[in-house]
Image (cartoon, rainbow, N blue to C red; front, side, top):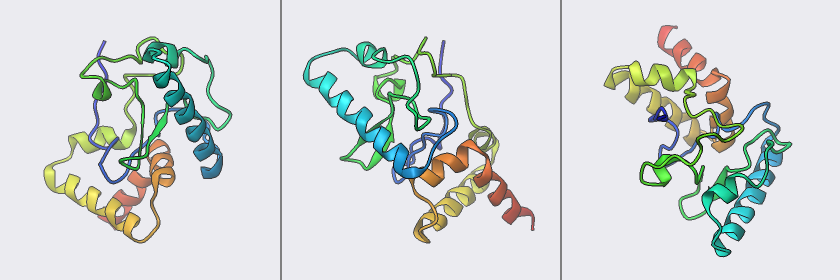
Length: 160
């Protein structure tokens, strides 16, 4: 089984966790949960435990609504899943994980992949503008992707 890649998950200057959970809580609660995941991830790495052992340490989502496998990359200032095939030379360790739908793609990413290069560039410019104005960060980006509000706002600007 393959995953569906998207050009919007990791943009280099912002990352999305929109498909890595459900019923997300507030930014602070999610940040604390990701910090805890990251500490657990580093603990597993220091103790030479496998990614599968890390993945299977719990069977439920955190109370913040996020997957327990979502961690920070402090060097790059991003959020990522260490089980994702893009982190593992194509090997997908997420297969058969309880809450990971590897075939999921959000509505925004689906349409983005269908757009021509100009529309894609316009959307990235829209996102960069929001970030520059201080209206977009990892949390608002992820939630906005998950609930389609960024797509709706962008389309509203295009058609007004």
